[in-house]
Length: 454
Image (cartoon, rainbow, N blue to C red; front, side):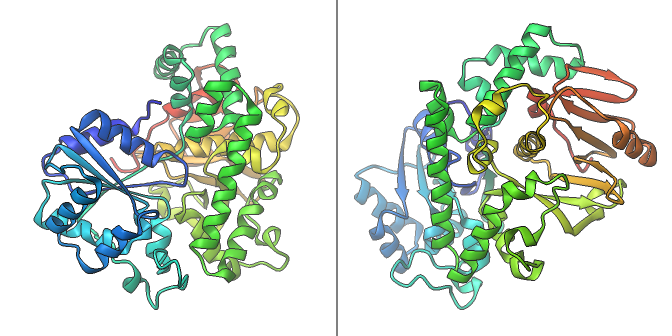
């Protein structure tokens, strides 16, 4: 399936001064698959070293990280010539081997002609926690994070892969022309033909069930079975729970799971601010702060912070004590919340609070995929704006509605207070632009792109 990140990978390959690449992202977003496809299509050959499954490589690297000797060893082990600029070496699950991470530094400094791409699902967790996952028999944290992992700052390039967004879902389901039409109408603000608009909304609702995890999308393409998709999503959630046990101390694991399991209840509230007491009675930031940070570093959730004012730069207005937590994939949210598929396929105007949460989670996921940091605003707990974006010197209040019913009170209040020249309204309505408000259908959120610095 076509992924947008391929263009970034090609740009990396074509840059003669490129450094070793680290591709990060949550479990099951397709990192290993996309790197193998990239190696297959754009290199003479490739090898994939699964550092979690090949203990002999980890053992070798403990004693030797000289680049030429590493290359010679891998050639012998995989019976494959590794040629400068012609062979892609994929180091998969690099968080399971700190010496492999350190070796990237020496490849960059001494032998940059070798193309090395590493993939890591929980690299951020490993680096920040000081955990030594490759020591299967010990399972204890290192005495300090520096001893466990020394991240090669400045010696590597980084990319992050997210679940497939709605545009990639359209490509996968054979709706390439529709995806192009959506981009065209987003740019022109011209109304989409009613029948095409209805078809796009229908596909959007299906995406809410299938989500963006590549295996789930492929299963939907192959079978059109939501039951099969949910089975895959359940398996992914089980894997996330297993990671919590593997990459965290036992006491922390309990807290991580409590926070993760509380997400549907957090989003079901009318006030979706994260409340520690829903994770555990008597819970506080001191108790659960580390657990939430773990989930963020693992890529399983997105944190949407409150901003107190709509002034530039909005990053300076963040309130760290007030935030929302969204799942990294809307399909996983539906699975975890046990949301019946038929409710997600019903009328988008159905009176159900949680459907509004699903729409918000979908938007947050789409913004994150476009490298937009999610933030929200509220005014004395009476008015709220789901997302606040910054595009250059402009602050853009962004209202999200699950259906066609819209209410401009909060939007107009924010626009007037902070003199915003443009606002976004994301809803089930068609494209349009009036009175400074750009109407964006739910299915077109992938078109939103911003730059916080201009």
